[in-house]
Image (cartoon, rainbow, N blue to C red; front, top):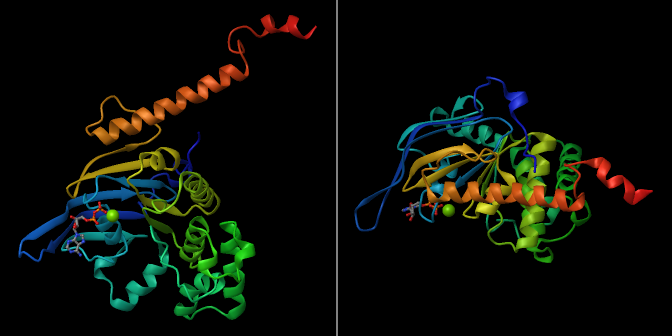
Length: 291
Ligand SMILES: Nc1ncnc2c1ncn2[C@@H]1O[C@H](COP(=O)(O)OP(=O)(O)O)[C@@H](O)[C@H]1O
Ligand SMILES: [Mg+2]
């Protein structure tokens, strides 16, 4: 399976996301300090689909929330689109966040608002767009996620997969460069997960938005991601290109991803061979069957 490509367009361009030695600790009720993310550096390039994986409690969500400064790092710098978010004023940060969409496991839609109003919300609060512009952009985003016909529906009338599509449309409405996804398929069944991952892949290819996805499902990484980073106890342990099984991974998760990729490649090869037996050996040998 081919993965969304970014190499051709990115050249030596600066990464769209750069975390420089970021650190985040939480004070626990016991009075102890817990280091959720420890001196972590990471570059993510424009157009990439980047997976963050690790066990529960490894610091994945905290790391994702550092990218849009929902969590402010205790130390280190967070660059998005070349700007260091840690130096921005409150209003500059609000503007810059238009460049960073986010979706969550539980969708976080406004229950009392229609699909139209949910997707229009980030455009309306910004107050910079005319009514006609908002209308056109909402329709465009709903078409992108395949939900054009649900525009006047309320969230309660939608399936889980459809709710997550509305959340994606809402996140994309302000035309962000980056889409952050925190376990976006964890509340969905296998079939719906597959369809949603296809939508995310499609969006990445069509509009080139950079996707960073936190997940505990290795199949999500295998199907969707070009690159992956593995977190343990707030540290980045290893990082690699998903489609290039390496000689030796440091982590069990890394080895499992390699195994999934190899199995997929084997399946594709076998399916090809059984569809056209002998095709790769001697085509002429097949001819008598057709005369
Ligand atoms: N606001 C907070 N206050 C205290 N501890 C927190 C807070 N947010 C996260 N943590 C702790 O930090 C660790 C990492 O959390 P999180 O980033 O949510 O992990 P993950 O998403 O990998 O499961 C967990 O042990 C969690 O309990
Ligand atoms: Mg989490």
